[in-house]
Length: 312
Ligand SMILES: NC(=O)c1ccc[n+]([C@@H]2O[C@H](COP(=O)([O-])OP(=O)(O)OC[C@H]3O[C@@H](n4cnc5c(N)ncnc54)[C@H](OP(=O)(O)O)[C@@H]3O)[C@@H](O)[C@H]2O)c1
Image (cartoon, rainbow, N blue to C red; front, side, top):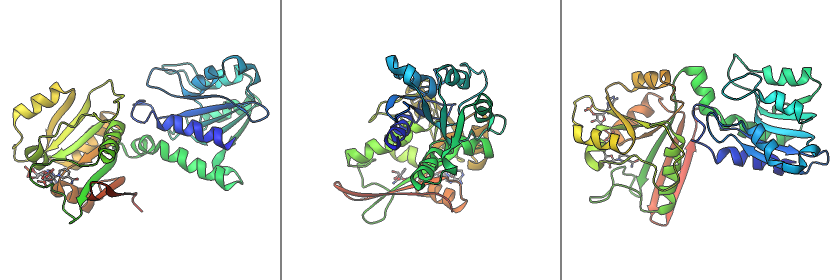
């Protein structure tokens, strides 16, 4: 069963950046013998939840559905889609393993309680005696970290990305404005794809005139991604802003990073990628304005090191 659960987690991760404002979710349906019958993920807001996708994926084997693993507690309320708890009961699922409880205090525990009341054996992976199950619970928590952070603080979850060359410089050599390795470009565009907004500084815009679009991987986004540019002196020209809007971004000039995080949070932005030069990056580090710090050291076009840190 562990492998099936990992596949459900992987299916959810593949949709990072596609589900906003909903969190990513994955699910797996098993037979009584532990055979995987269906895997599903939430594909996007307004579309069926992961549980429903997983039940659908069972096809003709649905009658053998016995247990389900879902990375996030099933919902018990009518939203844009009907409650998942009802679908699980209708499918005859008898045991439900939950990776993470819903972090929304208004609904937390409700789905699990409704299923228990209907006689379903509901278990939390975080309470398992097995270490690999508890480990998986941590991955499920991590999957929804931006959503949890936004609910708790009202601010987007900030990924701060910085790239150093072999000499420890953030400024690229003259004539270049980006990484040389295709692998790193893909990784950087994955980080961008996950984000509802990008934050940068005027220094970066003036030096590189970056596009800030997702090009090296498929972009899932249908709504425009926000582009907030820190520029207290008004050095960024109107032509850059107009071109950014033409590329499908929602650019705006801001003067206070913390106030902008509050504003973006209030607008429903859960996840932000900061891609700035040393001035703004150092400021954000000094003031603890990050939730995930991605440091890339590029020693040569073939050799790089990626470090991901979380605040302690
Ligand atoms: N290696 C990397 O990861 C990376 C990433 C991006 C860019 N870069 C490189 O970085 C270089 C540019 O460096 P940079 O340091 O000038 O760029 P930057 O940090 O992107 O922009 C600096 C500007 O941001 C504004 N700013 C800084 N701190 C602020 C704060 N606390 N609140 C509000 N605004 C603030 C300031 O403009 P005002 O004073 O006008 O407000 C400042 O001049 C370029 O060569 C670029 O290629 C490297």
